[in-house]
Length: 404
Image 1 (tube, rainbow, N blue to C red):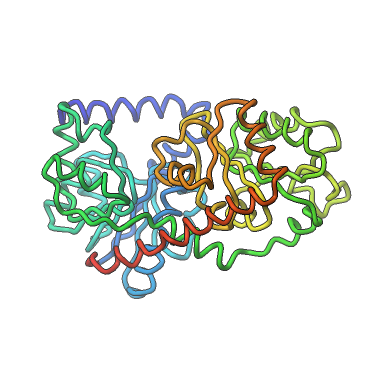
Image 2: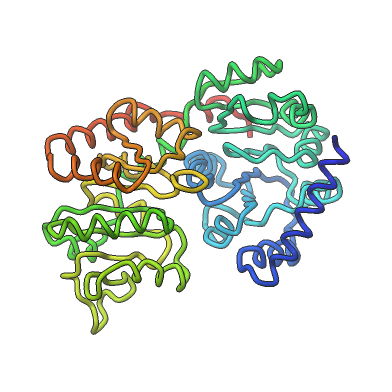
């Protein structure tokens, strides 16, 4: 199994190398690893995140560790360009790198350089050689905000190598009871049900959001529908809804903001109905437009403070994006059908604060109910906010047990 794992990783690297000739993300993935120069530290605490979403999830723990250990170096690694390229200069860390490819030699070299006293991985990311090297050196390895499902490889007859990876972990901090029980079926008992640190992150953001005067000016007293992290299938729905509801204003914050992606959105909209965020303040600015398209990264978590209803993208693709950011501000959330892997989305549906749609027809019914019934909308938003508030505290539970 290890031979197959190593061979698969090398094949994956060659595939990314091939794609890097014409794919920007793949090129960044290769370049970032090829040009890495690691700083030698006498001691550090290592945080790893798959991408930007996992970073935001684990950020509360990172911030608290930074505060509690101001003299200890913090090293952060990312697997994906979506995390590294945005957070590579953040003040929370003394060094930020792409995670090297998971080989035995790379694991030894990297750990030799940063000398971690502890490694903290958020939610996903299981790498055999890094885990084994940490275990070999008796360096504590923690998984925070972990979540496990029966269909994962750890629980399959062919998952012996991945079960070995789990045996290298010092302690798992999982989101729910099901995850703990699943781990116990494979004799993993070093588990604490801590909850999800994302609740702490989004709640803190909602209590002290960044003011956005231009958004307030755009809203201008209208009701506001915010579509966050959208993909093309989502944007078609939003464009139709905006046309049907001229008395509302809309914000579309796409997941990808390349010129071609933005053009695909504007092709769906009537001329004169929209404005780009980058155009606000310019001579062509017209804040009386019905639709505002966010053509930059980093605003979404603060945008929701101005909304009445949120649509979260990704549900017609690989999976929905962060519903909790909007819920923390008291917005009911709508999303596509691919949400079953996301506990918080299922919870929001159960309590009447989240709404899953399958197509344009069900989207129109759901959106119309929320738009036309202010009491129903407000009640759903209240339930969403209370759900977030009731689930904060994971950060404190984790910090009370980890040793760094």
